[in-house]
Length: 438
Image (cartoon, rainbow, N blue to C red; front, side, top):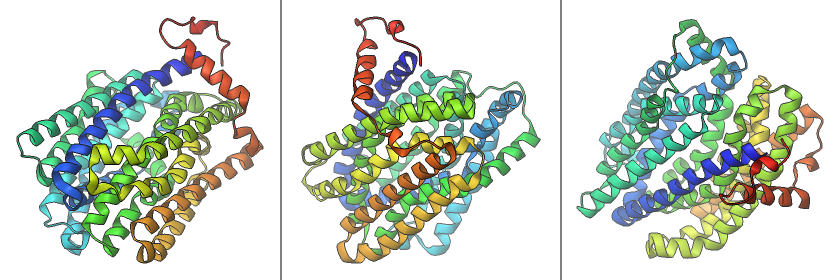
């Protein structure tokens, strides 16, 4: 537990710094572009992000599933970047062509050139994602930390310079976003994470095939998080998208602590036996629940002040949206470890079915509620769908492991143990080595 806590605190430190810079960057963009301009910017970013997430063909999940075979690990590392660049290039071109066919105005975009620029970041984004996953599988948590931090610093600095010179607009903001997306890959390469002694074309094919088996699940999860943006744009306009997307970004901050914990535990979940992995998943999920609940409460209480002070009065309508989204986002954060355990079982339906069901419910609720309540209906629909996904994933975990759901809920002892471990990891406190292992 001590080593886990130290790694978690290391990632948390990087994430906290990234969070501060992310809030600053987001605030500068929001104030410079106003809600409508931010809506256009975010729509172009959403198209490129969609191409990234659909085009990676669940390569990270395939890497994790194949990592259990030690003889394949070196080739998985060697294949990482070339495979990502090929898939990313094809996906970026497909997204650009699709927007040209349906018409940029359909997505409230003033021209196709914005999507073309944003989609330059698709190969970089996929390669960075693959490299980050390899770093975590290798236990190189510090590389993941530096990758996130370097990208955040680069984007924050560039946006600040452009805003100071009054040259920050939708196009220049997108160029900065593309550049920041490639920074994690540069850092991973510099640390030697993506350098493999050999490449294996057959294993690359196996990776793609394995990923495709799982891809409907992660793709559905991604669309669950972003389909509401497209639907809101279709029913309303760029201004509503600008405000709602800000609320989504703020709500996502409440997953920070739970996400950090799940990243630290990834290696242990996939390097141990099924029984050991299930035990780790149960014990650490209890801490993830504590962190998710605390984060959601803090964000909900601070949202009115945060939005007014940081983003300005033009975005005050985002506050109730954050509060509507918070319960669902909290549930997703708390259920990340059980969902990762389902992935290691290599039974695609355990990953795919819950995600597809939640996506279908999300789309149906959005179509029903957006015409009635606008962005508020969108937030409510999405939050309910997130809760459903977390419940389905948890139910499947308990079914395949035979573990009772109540064992995933924290008690007083868990809270005290976690606080004691965190306190011992602070410099100047008693040595963490005095803690029992586990």
